[in-house]
Amino acid sequence: MIRSMTGFGEASAHIDGAHYFLEARSLNNKYFKASIRLPDDLQGLEAPLEAILRRRLARGAITVTAKCSDTSESAAYEINCEALSSYIDQLGKLRQIVSGQATFDAGALLDLPGVLQAPADNQAAHDRARHALSDLLNAALNDLIAMRQTEGEALAQELMKHHDVIVDRLGIISERAPQVVEEYHQRLRSRVEKMLQSVGATVEPGDLIREVAIYAERSDIAEEIARLSGHMEQFRQLVTGDSEEPIGRTLEFLAQEMLREANTLASKSSDADLSRCAVEIKGAIDRIKEQVQNAE
Image (cartoon, rainbow, N blue to C red; front, side, top):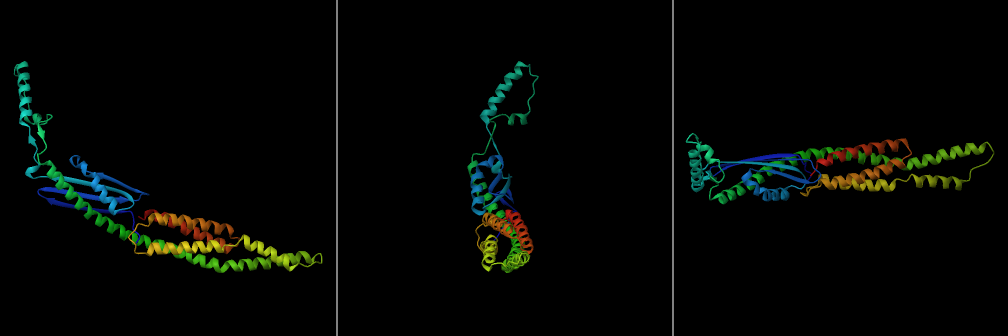
């Protein structure tokens, strides 16, 4: 099953007075690339969240943004009374030096280093956040993957249109190729006979057959047709198959091989009809190469 690399998902939850929100976005990328944005006090969760992303997504540039606001009593920072008392004693000495004219704001005192400290059970809150964000990430990825699958279905339909064009033109080329050799035989025979009639000579059948055989060998495209037909069958199986494995990079490589065979086929085509079909095949393969870059 083909999936796109573009998707979006989000999830949120209220747990023990804390509100968690997470969103995940993914865009095209040749490889897997994760960018995880977390609150400062939750930066340690980046590694486990990235592990979830790698387990569920194979390719794409994925951006995860998480936010957390805790309104419970346990979120309150504790005042370090000893540190605050030390600051007040030092400020008292300063007031004596300036003859009692200095005033101090209580809010400013709380901003001094070491006065406010994280809650003693901060580890418990950290563990709670880890479980919450892991669950939210999996929920958001469910929506993101569902969107990727929906877009992948549309992508598969478009790719199969180009596949059908290539297969149709290959059928025309397969039927036309033997006729081209026979037509060359007739044209060559006619030209040689006209030239020799002026001098009263005749053409030797063996010489004519040898020349036609050389032309047929030089313009033989049976091998290219067979290989390209094989590539198209593999392409069809990948695009329409039910495998959950990512196939984007396989399709990119296969499209390169298809184009290589099409280029060789076009270079050997001396007939106008064959050349036109070869050009149409190359155009369809180019469009396939562009579109499979969006496949996971």
